[in-house]
Image 1 (cartoon, one colour):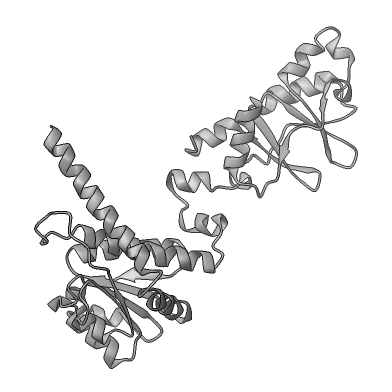
Image 2 (cartoon, rainbow, N blue to C red):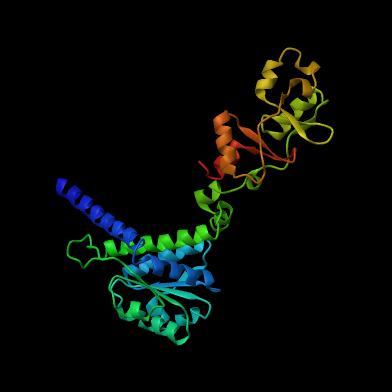
Length: 318
């Protein structure tokens, strides 16, 4: 098995060297074209249309998806399909990003010609200086020379890794420029574990809360705890502000003569709370840290809902 491991390490080392060369290029000859590409995308009123054939196409799909999920509207258009009607997807106001390691891929000719005919800005990414794609492009992003990891130079490996990294660099630079926040990110990722992690407390909390007044007898508080099923009840003052919470621990501490007390005498004052607009992940972290099962969502002192740790579990946050 040793030769296999040596091959794997050589492949990763070769591709890492390519990424290092790309980073160095961004501090030198690739710096101005990169900034120019950023400007074209930021000034666009339409979408970033990404296109590429073969392995470049697979990379292009990922780049388009990353753009779209981080605040830069984008779509992938297959160059061969573009030649059979899909050029209608590419219109004035768009920016076209075409990927081709050789810069001479025949299938990209029509989409490149379309951009020239209708004066649609074209960003070309290629590894061959002076290639047709880079000569035709408004902004030419020339990948640095780097050996492919296959050893023969014919299998796209290092070149596709560099192209993917360059696409990520553009996407993240655009994201940071636009001050793209976790809340924005959540809007594009409502499903799955990522969507759950970015959910707000207000998305998961229960508005039907267990609440009693400060002067409520403990018999009423016990009925409220049992009826709502959260194992706790909040205690509010005459203005409706949350001033305390009654938990199982409070009940045990006042077991002797419990029913002779009112809620204010048994409750724990100044309970842990969280804002309804906070990320549910922050609420989960607080519950796990404090070893509690519930948090009241409170805005301006008034309870808005209650979140149970099971709500976070059901949402797939853990």
